[in-house]
Image (tube, rainbow, N blue to C red; front, top):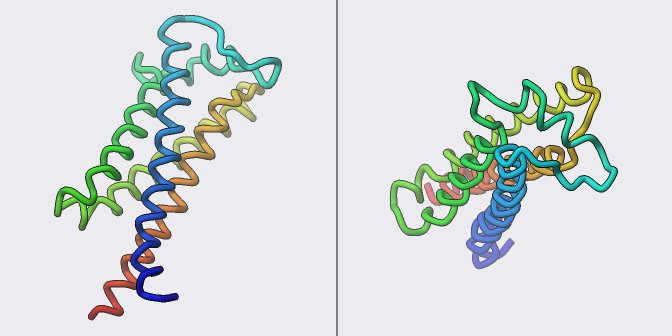
Length: 155
């Protein structure tokens, strides 16, 4: 790969990560609204959003899981947006995004298990969120690998 392509790749990975995080913000904001407004989710006959969103697993100490997800997606989006502006985030931002995405992916895996094997109900919005955070994790790993390759070739 040429030098200009090598330099453009981290920018593309960051941009795609930001798009996934923005979609995660929309998804989790909707689920947060559904939970807090105590209204039915629009699932159009696919899955059982209400069973999942009203279960004991939909909150941690009274805080909706969707609100926690919203916070994580906003934090990831903020880190990605500020990486090019703050030197400390230029250095540690990709690792922070990786840590948040790894934690989110592991928690999403647990929640997916709960949906499938405890509640016997699936929320399509939750599945979308799990796929988005997993996609962000894959991109974060690619960004870290690209950064380590760039550092080793520069040294």
